[in-house]
Length: 329
Image (cartoon, rainbow, N blue to C red; front, side, top):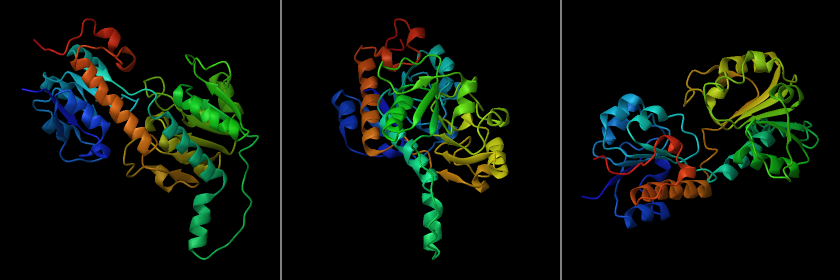
């Protein structure tokens, strides 16, 4: 009986392509989650996992309780680089390899980051609303050139944003204690406090770990320039939304551009009624090319593991799975 792979992300719902061919040519039986939606609940995920060997995963919650119910599961392969929706410790205890897709969507996220930045600085959303209502008020906009962009997190995405910023003649500073940028990189490493103090724009590109939860909050906003623009295309919980909303309403924060939220969708969040906010529904990493590359890489990770190869650079718990094999016997 062939091994079974469950595909969960709605963007891959019954979508033909190289990722699907990779699985079928390796002999897998492919199933799609039901219902296909942006985010399966824990109960909906559990209803789909019976007799599944590997998952091509979105951001649905792989909790310890769920993983404990399905001992046949061998691989969770995320279509993306974040894995905070997976209890990696619980997965490791059960011998489940957790894979991600590094380097596949950084250009997609960096492009959206700049689109949001430009939308704020060039007043695109309020201008559209004003013109649809019959107005034609030619207000001055602000330049990006000469502004200081502070990047919190300087991996592939942060560095891609920095390259775009160089084209816009921005000064780039970053905080990332483990970053290893190339010699010709345009960014300047600074302390986190210096980044808060110097940046006209703060853009978040850090992973969500206990140390970074609510990294942007009342206390850190107080260290920033009055009128700062805050952008988040990483993980929603990097920002305390109630504190950000308060900063926007007081004018301490000049604007916010958000693609991710503490709760998605952000029903009831105070950020929905705060002024000077541009929002998108967590689409930073899912442009057509980014999704294609991530889907192929996620499926290849499953095939590699099934065929006895161990792609260490894509397995987040690789160091804790010595001698890992597909078989559960």
